[in-house]
Length: 384
Ligand SMILES: Cc1cc2nc3c(=O)[nH]c(=O)nc-3n(C[C@H](O)[C@H](O)[C@H](O)COP(=O)(O)OP(=O)(O)OC[C@H]3O[C@@H](n4cnc5c(N)ncnc54)[C@H](O)[C@@H]3O)c2cc1C
Image (cartoon, rainbow, N blue to C red; front, side, top):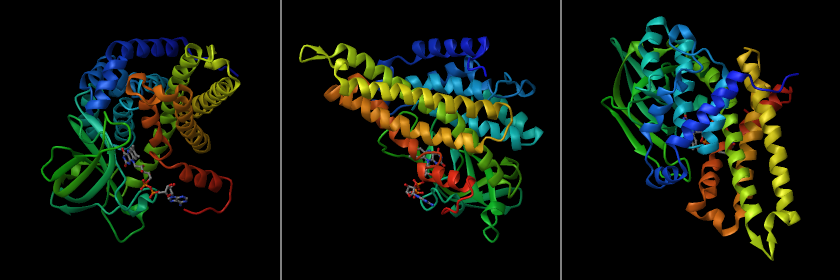
């Protein structure tokens, strides 16, 4: 059993570390978070460095990397900020759906601008009355000649309002059949007539932003349906599994950053004449954090390695998503505790990780949904 990365993967990791140090220093991250603006220059720097090409095959202009390579990148981006990296993840996950389910014409149309950083994708599944219960979505698309007319609303759509963003929306094209058959995946530019967006005031992830999207008689050409009419459920499930596998790496990166900040502080901060890290209460917290991060990484690298090998990995992905999301939120809380008042001050960054970490056990499927899924895989009867 070989636990090491390849030489290429080590080089990839080093290049991402250097890129982020150059383009996303801590003072810029604080500013973007405070002012709630997205750094388009950073996104373009990823595109210029070829990071958006990484998981796509060479025949469509990609670099032919696998899920594990992508997980390494997301880990390093998230060590710097789990917020700014979300625009990267969202674009990639949706782009991979176009690769898997799109026609040759659709791949030729959408993938080159995506890989060059000229467009971004945002994932539009959730709605006010459809969160964990995805099948309850109500947004509809009705055929009208060569177009669909889309009406409805999406909620919590990460990055929907960013420049040149296309919302990969899941809509009902047939409300009379089971949702697995009546759901369709359609691409809606955020500038199309009838689309209105509102950036929501959220606890964390304030730079990339979480949006509410309203669709009023939006005219969308038929050739923007990916996976065929009624093929939305397959796209959604395939995309979600990939998102959960890779975002586990983001959770590990965030937890690692929190641990590094807390450990440094514990070694430097002196109270009662000695560094606080020498108090058993603090040392044990850090020991637990380090142990759990190693466990989380093992789950994550294994899940992504299985995905790279095109093996069935539903159980392993779910283990990784459940464990690492709860770990990151828990560790950020411990990090604040270790840093005392400084942990809550913007100049010391821990509070940003704390705020950004809180959504990990909710977004891309809640912890309860992951546990339901695992119980079902065990053959236990659980709720939906
Ligand atoms: C920061 C952030 C970014 C997001 N980005 C996106 C995005 O880009 N695109 C997108 O489409 N969505 C996005 N989401 C939405 C996310 O996927 C949903 O919030 C999530 O699926 C939960 O839905 P909900 O919030 O409606 O909660 P609900 O489904 O209403 O759940 C509320 C509570 O009930 C529990 N619950 C529900 N059903 C069950 C059950 N059967 N058994 C046990 N417990 C249950 C849940 O676990 C939760 O604790 C984002 C969310 C957040 C917070």
